[in-house]
Image (cartoon, rainbow, N blue to C red; front, side, top):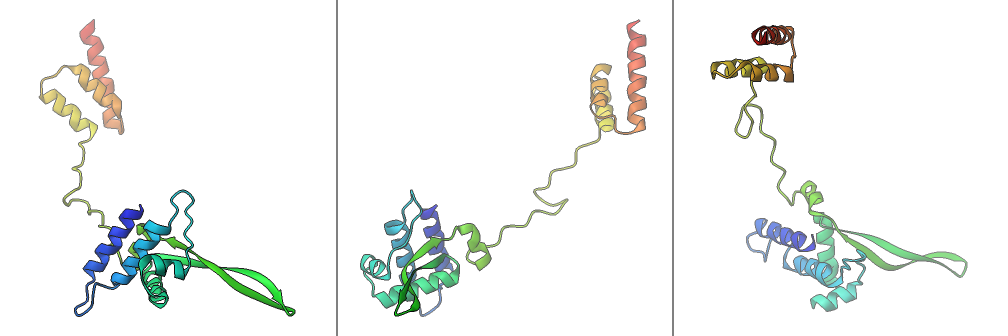
Length: 185
């Protein structure tokens, strides 16, 4: 899933190339940070992804401020989400929250469709167009086809037995059974 997600993000960046810029809407730096997050920091056994800006910057060989901008761009595009984790403390009688780290989550590509990254799913074909199955004939028509083919009465009775939906089907079924009994005796 991680490899597929990265390749889809890279493909989206290629499709949204802007003239005069390096890359598309994400940019090569955001892709580099995404690659670093997915392949260097993401624990596939636990799902944990919580590196610091400094760790990402060191691994991706970028400045801390560049990493911060790339992460914002990934979040704005709907590829990445994070939750700030803080610890509580009291200093001089004041309640203080101090950020410990961010918990990142690479959102699945199925959610990217809402952000416009992936193309919308193709609509289902309307009835009567290509890809639509032709309607099956009703049981009485199938039975008539069996008779035209010159088969015996037994397949006809089995066909009508499958689905005696209306009164005509039931009457034909009863007539066929009576004729079959008369022919046996």
